[in-house]
Image (cartoon, rainbow, N blue to C red; front, top):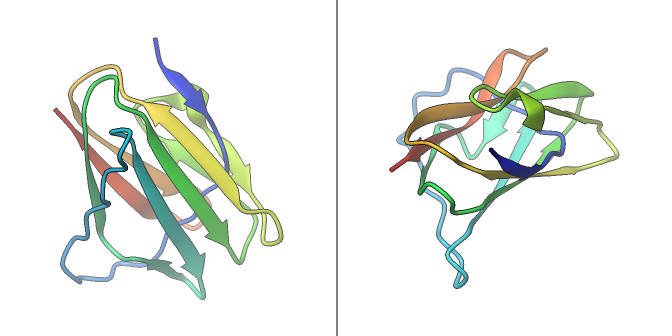
Length: 115
């Protein structure tokens, strides 16, 4: 079972910058802010460590309307619009790696590595 509150997200191009990690909050959850503007994801190549049962909140802004896809958890998919940022909450239920991406732009917003 997954616990989630889905919201829109976006992604960027094939930037080769070093991966960035999100800091955990004091409650143990990670909060990630990511934006898609002018064909680019900011921050680029974002990799977030996660733990089974630990919530992850991804706050997404985009300059285009698109579908946010959580590859491992299809029930978490959502939409994002230029004037409507989305907050996506996912609680991983199994170990492994999954991505959160912007479907129409075909870009990855966040890669989550769950242990």
